[in-house]
Length: 103
Length: 101
Length: 95
Image (cartoon, rainbow over all chains, first blue to last red; front, top):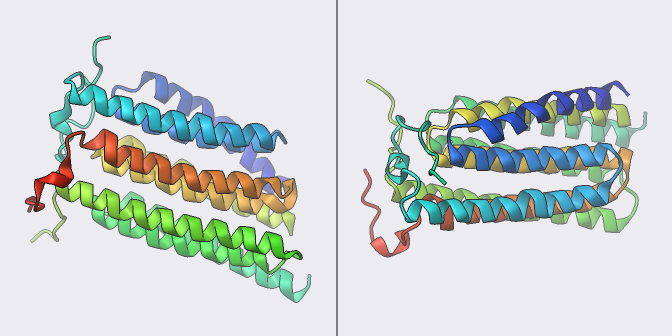
């Protein structure tokens, strides 16, 4: 089981780090994308725990639906001027920092 | 190891290599458009090779159809997503990369 | 044989982990989003490679993964990145 064993180790190492980045990152959009990736990897964890039905629900609801809803919410927030929307227009500068709406 | 197993092994390994190429492209290429190019093409081919490698070792027709359906769905969705992202990037004014000098 | 598939699945997962660098670095939102799409495709391949070991139910999860990538990218393009109606602007006048 060495091949799948390395799979488990990778998941176990990456997932907590990813969760920390989701919560503590400075950029809201980056956090949303990382949340989607987190859902994908969590579905793989459920597969490894031999719970494919939970993995199905996690992939569909946890990553897909919630991710799409969060992206929609973020767009709505930016449109109403909560986020700093103007620094996202393709410049390399200003891709991080100071993005939190003060709610 | 039978011949079909060798075929499956070679095809899946080649597919994994194309995924590796796609990841390297996404990390190393200079702008959004070139990264989209690397991602959609390399990954489509890599997934196709992996699906092919798994099809040669299946027995039933249902699994063959299911695997082929997954590949077709991924191809259609990734091509659509590629065009959408590229068009939105152009619309928002992301600059095209030019070779410096 | 299954051992080899597991090793390849680990290799693909390693690709995902390295590709996280693109999500972290950006610079534009499109870069982060297309990295997420890359992870969706890689996740499909990983699940398909694990399916001989863990049963055919993983093919269904792979199907859901493929759907998920499409839904999130479309939500991103239509709703999140450029909230005003960019189709009505006529020409793409970026250089």
